[in-house]
View 1 (spheres, rainbow, N blue to C red):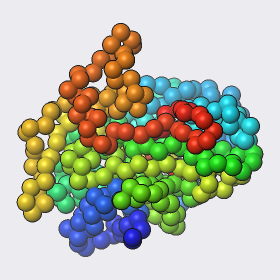
View 2: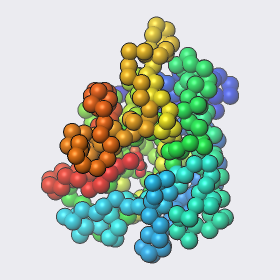
View 3: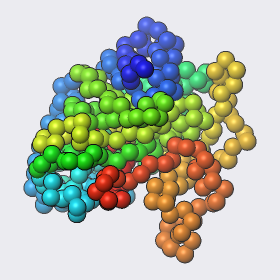
View 4: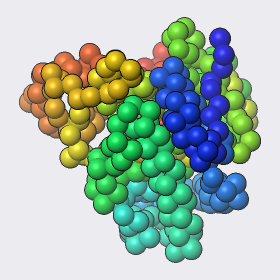
Amino acid sequence: MAGIPVVDLRLFASDPDRLSGELFDAASKWGFLILTGHGIPQEEIDGVFNLAQGFFSQPKEVKEEKWMNTAQVGYDHKESVTELTKILAQSIGIQEGCVFGDVAASNLTTNNLSSWWTHPRREQIEAFRARCHDLSNQLLTAFATAMSLPPGYFFPAHDPAKTPGNVLRLMRYPALATQPETNFPSLGEHTDWGTMTLLFTKTGGLEVKSPDAREFVPVPVVEGALVVNIGDGLALWSDGALKSTLHRVSREASLYDQDRYSMAYFVNANADAPLKFLKRGPEGKFTHDETKLDATFGDYQAARMRLFHEKFDSDVNGSGPVLDPKFVAIVKSLGVAHGHAITYGSAGVEKAGVAA
Ligand SMILES: O=C(O)CCC(=O)C(=O)O
Ligand SMILES: [Fe+2]
């Protein structure tokens, strides 16, 4: 079986239809692709990795000055698991993140970032987010083109002035003190719940479910390239034609005694955007499927989080919104909204936090 497809975005200028077709094929078979010729200068990517390294190497108190808030800005880390803390070199868990997610460049002025994030550093982050935003628009245009939709079809649902906005997450997976004996996923298998994700990483470890769903396949690290993966959003829009594929980060595949860094730019539809389902007709044209339930992406995200925690039916008297059972049934039947919290094989630990 051929591996994860590599697509060169430079083809967009000379042959947009062919490029769109290549993207669509990769996204419908694997849900993942390696994108070369994406136009984001390597020094800018390296610059943001350097910021991540600088920030994460700060003492805990500096990093923890500001915890992630509901606008998705600030620092967080996934819980560590008692049985496994002995092999963690540091006590901050298995993955820590610094998140820049507020709408319309307000990361420049938010008071929810550690004082380490000076104005020039924030400007560097915002410039990088702008690059990622332009690239994501180009990709959304290409997907719309491949689906015989107007090129700007996906834009109204991705208004940068509205919540939840696109989110840049810098991540560090701290080195482990000893080599784990069992398969040790640093980030448990999950699908991403947004529209799509741009992922930058310098170290192996990322693995994706193969199209025949039989195994997890390592994603190679290609110099100068980034990884694009389809999230639940595009899978929903396209009625499953584009795949939101399970993926995870495995410590077996990456060097256990070194910190692993990655950065994800999550493209998210607006919470109030209608969740419109398309269906594929003859000649690959997509049109609206009026028989499906219309709801918003906000509804979907709420359902997704609830499904993740398997709390659909148990919360009638508890906290949080009670979801329309019809909507819950649809989300459950879609086959994209599953994903387990982190599992540790024979360690007997069931849950250690929430994947993206
Ligand atoms: O760190 C990685 O390489 C993958 C991260 C990821 O899948 C996520 O944050 O959703
Ligand atoms: Fe992910």
